[in-house]
Image (cartoon, rainbow, N blue to C red; front, side):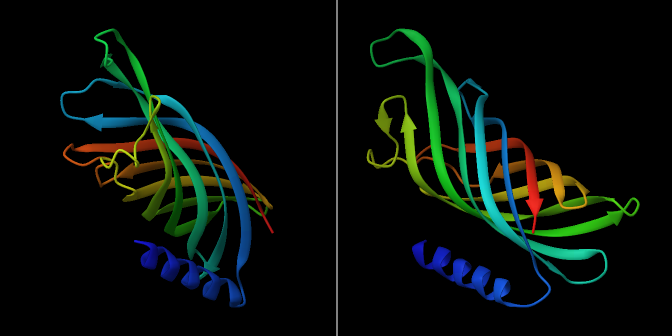
Length: 190
């Protein structure tokens, strides 16, 4: 997995070295939830922040790779180790690389609407289930990949957007537990 991330990072830098790119920064807050058979979960507040580039392919199409830190998770309903009912917080910090294809529709001279979609690849750097470390216990999976969908409204260099990420891989061994997150983001293009 580390080799994949290193290769993707090198590709990211190589694209950045080419002309006709636009740099951007963004941050956002939202909600995340887990999907697991036989377990009731609730959404929890999450955030992400990152930097990216946009490489035009034509007048309307472009590719938008980014490097982000994303916090995802959920609250799990049920009994704890002592048999008491309650909720357990699940929080996972990821370094992720979404690679999105984007279509820009020019509304007027100042505004654009951008629809974007593509895969993301993520590596868990920390993970907590209650007080326990998800990765030290040996049951957590660090690698996640999924689908990232979004829409942005651009006003000159300012961007406000909505993004939805759905993970395809389970976050723990022996369970089919996937994670999804929705974010409202703001950004700036350089």
